[in-house]
Length: 214
Image (cartoon, rainbow, N blue to C red; front, top):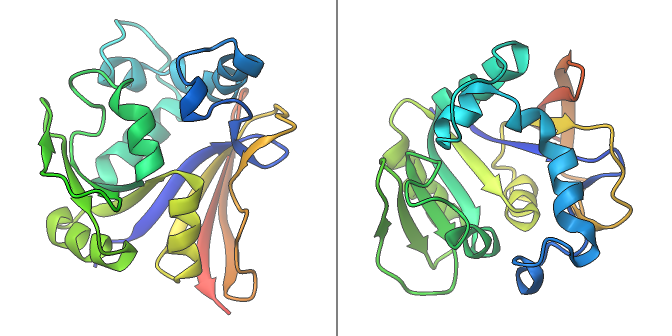
């Protein structure tokens, strides 16, 4: 059966998005300096050859361990699931050829027909909860895995429901001091973790965990 996982970047003080990165200010990169903070968190990604090629940012880029990890994450993903807020933030920012290249199931109360993009990405809008989205994702994933793309609220819902098998955190040496915390709302009485791998590189530490039930 396909595994359910997520893979996110996180600051040392536990945030995956800086303060000010709300939809109301998404087009103002100077608002509270959110863009600079977000770029610092993900600077290791922008250096990688695979990332640059996937978003058609031009030639070049690093080809080492970090690049391999990005390639492996992309290769294992057959379907993504995301929350409506993440979709709303990306709808106006992603290029016409959205970077997923898979079916994407969006958790929402909005009724909307599937939105097909060039390059193999089709967004499907799910109105009846996280388990329904996961059932549909399993049908579409084939023998590949299912990634909970974000944001934090969607990840926590799946974690607390016991539906996540494993996850990776790319922890960057930056502090945000505020913003969106990854684990706000976690039910610590239901979740237990096992460290399966820690991979260090000059800009980030990749921490892999298996999720078990208490």
